[in-house]
Structures are given as C-alpha cells and as structure tokens.
Length: 158
Image 1 (cartoon, one colour):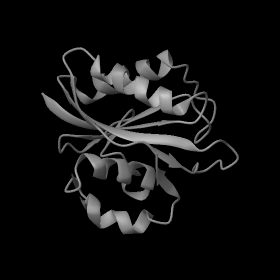
Image 2 (cartoon, helix red, strand yellow):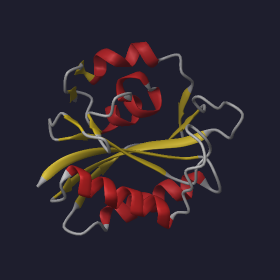
Image 3 (cartoon, one colour):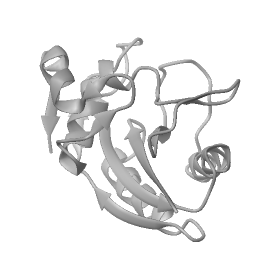
C-alpha cells in the first residue's frame, strides 16, 4: 500500500455537496482506504478570476494503485461528476489532483510528483495542514514553512 495526498476542488453546482460526495467516491476506490479528510475551505479562483469561488479540501488515501493508475481513477471520478476540461483554471464541477505519493519524485508526460505548484497555493496547503501539519514536501521542506508565503491568498474555513 502507498500513501497518497489528494486535493479536491469544485465551484459549479453545489460545490460543498460535490466535495463531500467525492470523498465517498475516493473511499470506494478498489483496495483503497480513505484515511482522513480535511476541513472544507472557500477560496478565491486562481488565474481566471471571473468565476465563482471554490470549495477546496484534501484527502489522505492508502492505495495499492500505482501513481498513474491512481491518476486514471481520479480522472474517472471527475468524469462521473461531469468534469469538462474546457480551459485551464476555469470553472469545474470537480477537480482532483494527486499531490504526493509516498515520497516519490516523478516526472512523466502525464504526471509530476510532487504536484509542481502545491507549495504555492493556500487552497492546497491549508487543507493538507489539517491532515498532517508536520508533512514534508519532497524537495521543498516542510509544509509549515510554506504557509506564511500563501497567507494572503484569501482562504476561509467553512
């Protein structure tokens, strides 16, 4: 079994209900166990700012799936929730990102681990801190060390 940290986000429809339902979908992944979920956070959009605010969260999963197989499973869950990839940073029914997979560092055409921007985004770091405030980010140090750099990004715990 491997330990994976995931980011969840939604800003279309009922994003709170969507994120909560996505937690259940993650728990149902074959052979996997959902170990923990973060609080929910309301956050400002990044990139395209003329869209609804997001609801974001994080999850900790034990899984037998290899990183790219887990990515495929996450994309399938997004599709179940009606995700359409129309534009980068655009509105979405559900976004699932694989942030960390054990301490693995990986760079393939489909997947980069750790997620290349996780340390720059409050909507990722604050939910991760709920799961493990002492978490180490491979190649980047501690999660706690990055929190002050994103404190001004407009995040509110629901």
